[in-house]
Structure formats: C-alpha cells, structure tokens
Image (cartoon, rainbow, N blue to C red):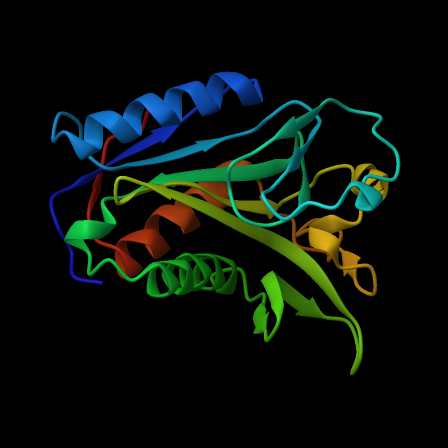
Length: 217
C-alpha cells in the first residue's frame, strides 16, 4: 500500500480491559472518519478473556473460565491474555483503495515479516484465517489470529500474536472454530523473544507494508 500521512503508533504498558479498548476504538473510528484524528496502531495486552466474533458458534465455547465478550469483528472465538501482543489497527481504507481483502492480506504480510525477523517462517492457509507454523505435513499450529471490522470506511480490531501466553487457556474454546490444529507461541517454539523485541519488529515491518508511523505511546 502507498504510504500516506504518518500513522500514530501507541504502546500500552499495562493490561487494558477489553471493554475499555472497544469504547476507545469506536470513538477513534468516528474521529478518523471526520478527519479529526490520524490513523492508529495500538499495541497492548488484555487480561485473560474470550471474545466471540460475528461467526462464533456456541458449541465452540467449551469452558468459559474467563469473561466472554461479544465482538463486532469477523471470525469466531479467540482468546486474549498476558503474553499475547494484540495490535489494534485503525486505518482509513477509503484512502487506501477500499479493498478489505487486500487490507487483510496486508495485515497478514505485516505479521509474516515481523516474525521472519526472528527467522520464524509463518504461512497462510487456504480456508483458515490467521497465520500458521507447520508442525508436519498435515497439522499446523496457529501463532497469530486476525479479525477486523470496518465502519464508515475505517478499520478496527486487528491482530493478535502469541509471544508467551499460557497456551492451556486456549483449551476453553475451539480457537477460530478450527479443531484439527494446535496453538503455539514464539517462546514455546524456542524463540527467546521479549515483548519489546516483538514491538520493534512489528514497527519495522508495519512501515514496510503500510507506511510511516509516528510516536511511541
């Protein structure tokens, strides 16, 4: 995508409650649509929660041990929690061609490039949302989830990357409705990456894919 005006880059050092993040994003969408605020990438962590996307099936909620929130993003059930980097991306798609599929492909490319900087290869799989690490010829492990919503031509929600979450927490759901594959993380795969390391990689890769960002918080 062609670089535009600088995009605000914000990092929250403390866990952000999910409802607080949603209220903020919805307000920011209105501000971006009105031309009163720049586009935004917001990196954060949530307390342990499950979120239900617009395609979520009740049968995929196996053990609601954590709060469950309905989400307007696409997709099914996902887990968020400490050790997972969530990236909320609020972009004016009307100024970027308006192609939502191309935008989602760009989000995937962003994460692929960021993780490649640690020599980790992740792949897209036809018919499966998110990014995957091949375990063998038939089974993959999911390392990143993607779910977006668009309102007034502005995207929100975004991506989540498993750095070092408690992987047992994913057993409370069928992640993204896909039961035949596993879930993994950078640390579980043997990559000694810190959250600060990941944030640097994400910033560098984002600028390659989407354009210049400004600010740290």
